[in-house]
Image 1 (cartoon, helix red, strand yellow):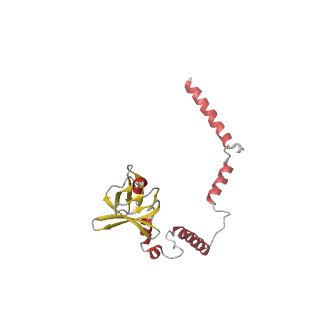
Image 2: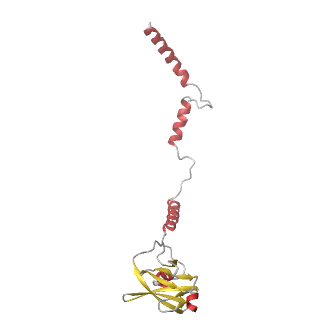
Image 3: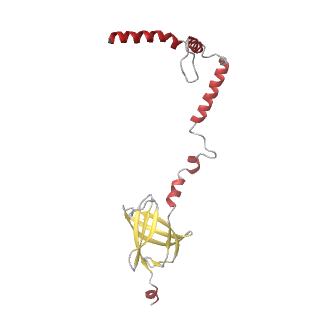
Length: 200
């Protein structure tokens, strides 16, 4: 019984096959007949129909234009306007950087160990190393106000800058000055001038 049913279904399907192949294509995307297949084959064979053919000269001209555009983008080492950086500075830039951030504001009168008074004001601090001795020179404009002996150290005092100078409170009689440069780091203690005892 199953064999008979299977044979009948097979015959019906084989009879319906030519009818399915002859159905025209519809908008919903169904497959068309042999005419649509032939049209599709012709399109594949003539894929470049309708395109303009270009000559070798036009192709070369376009290729050169593209290469020129790429070369412009690849130019990383563009010349600087003006003078060359190295010719203009010759290392002076490093010296200028080393001299920056070396201004110290002194909010009270100080007295150096040799009795020199350092009045309130702003000072440019220049560190100087002579043989085994370290000095911090306090300048106002181009005038040397005081030369304070200092102690060289490897401590950078947790400062982020390479060049620094700071006045820190130490106790009631003295302040601590810390100094850092490309050459060395140093610190010193300077006595606070006591107005009352100095008058007596």
